[in-house]
Image (cartoon, rainbow, N blue to C red; front, side, top):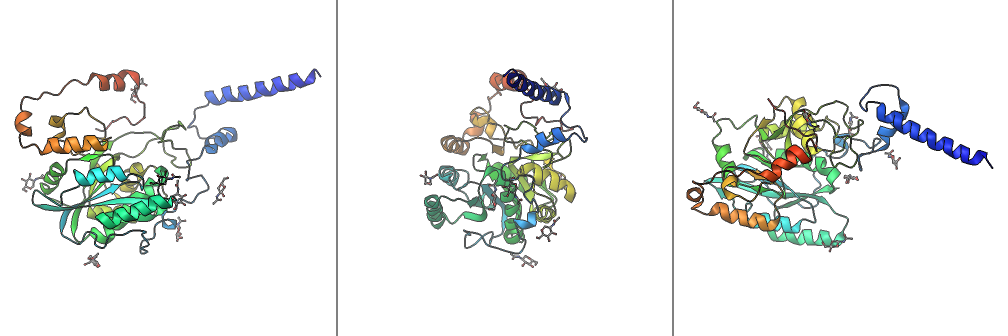
Length: 359
Ligand SMILES: *[C@@H]1O[C@H](CO)[C@@H](O)[C@H](O)[C@H]1NC(C)=O
Ligand SMILES: *[C@@H]1O[C@H](CO)[C@@H](O)[C@H](O)[C@H]1NC(C)=O
Ligand SMILES: *[C@@H]1O[C@H](CO)[C@@H](O)[C@H](O)[C@H]1NC(C)=O
Ligand SMILES: *[C@@H]1O[C@H](CO)[C@@H](O)[C@H](O)[C@H]1NC(C)=O
Ligand SMILES: *[C@@H]1O[C@H](CO)[C@@H](O)[C@H](O)[C@H]1NC(C)=O
Ligand SMILES: *[C@@H]1O[C@H](CO)[C@@H](O)[C@H](O)[C@H]1NC(C)=O
Ligand SMILES: *[C@@H]1O[C@H](CO)[C@@H](O)[C@H](O)[C@H]1NC(C)=O
């Protein structure tokens, strides 16, 4: 009778002791500590478990085309820019808002631009029917053969490069990758692209430097060692929106076919693959990935802005089209954003490990 509680106590003690021991061991230490390794490897990235193949060629074939939905004509006109909006089957409202606002114009400041929504597959057949109807109506949806999910965003971006390389390379100078919760100031973007002397070797966006893999398993950017072994990510561009010239798209696509997939698409494409291909991502201050407070006078000079619900998209679009905007903004002085300052400096410093340290 007496030995049972003792055995339980002993086990609790052992577990607790092991836990304390693990706390004291630096998580990144190389070594033969199988207990620690087991613990790290035990938490997999959903869909990219450590025995799942990450060989890109197993998912995306260079010369095989088997899209579920493909518009009749893609990039068949000479254009400055093709905008690929990475969307998800369920985001009908976001697509509608984009079509009615910043995505509505095919000619901007005398340049042609085109726009497509890129989505993956859904298992929900009634949703799929709605997507097909939407595509019949607007002809701007490209649906590819992979399950649409957060951890498959890298596949979506690789497919985007394949499409751009296949259909757009002879007609179009630049590719914009953008999420469907973003506002894009298209005239501002077109202006800055058409001002460039060289339309090759361009990779632009919001540059993030010195970011480290996040070991917190509850983070959506969680990255275990089996996915990425180095201590620091290469400099990369925020995935909310980035621009590249089509020659870069081709070189990046070729590189992805030889580079194991990493589940965070921006780090994979504009960091890991760009570095391997010898392409340097550049910071373009007009790209932001934060939500600003609602202020058209600040939006004027920006190209991308994050987290726009459809209603705000419409308001912003109207505000930016106001011919008196520049005049009305003459007296505008940027407000001190105390809320953001508090959040960034006091409440949650280093909350994502994605601190900017670019020199
Ligand atoms: C990978 O491991 C999971 C869970 O252990 C298992 O269900 C799956 O079949 C394995 N996949 C492969 C390709 O071995
Ligand atoms: C990836 O898959 C392709 C096609 O199946 C194969 O030819 C290639 O050798 C694989 N690459 C690696 C590194 O395993
Ligand atoms: C399937 O899609 C329809 C329409 O988009 C939606 O109303 C329904 O909730 C979805 N069903 C499931 C199981 O997610
Ligand atoms: C990604 O897509 C592939 C191909 O459809 C699928 O097998 C896999 O389960 C998907 N992964 C995730 C994380 O959804
Ligand atoms: C683009 O041009 C190349 C070389 O002239 C040609 O081989 C290729 O078929 C063209 N692609 C398209 C989609 O027209
Ligand atoms: C483009 O070239 C001209 C003349 O060579 C030069 O003066 C100008 O600064 C260049 N513009 C850019 C954006 O590099
Ligand atoms: C946040 O990160 C910076 C640079 O990595 C570091 O100097 C600073 O001490 C960190 N702040 C906190 C509160 O951890």
